[in-house]
Length: 73
Image (cartoon, rainbow, N blue to C red; front, top):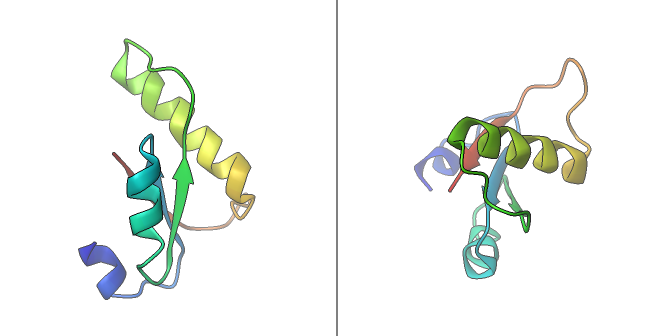
């Protein structure tokens, strides 16, 4: 997780469907893993939108003016 090494001021939300990947991401400082258990969507862009919206709801750190990085697997 190269991005975490630079320690950006904004939180890094890492969205994954794999529980093991989410557990491993806990080892990186500043990375907040979000486990997405929803069904896969055939359209990649809609699937990505679903995962991003889920991450923002779960973390509740995203305010209208907040900045953050999102990584999706």
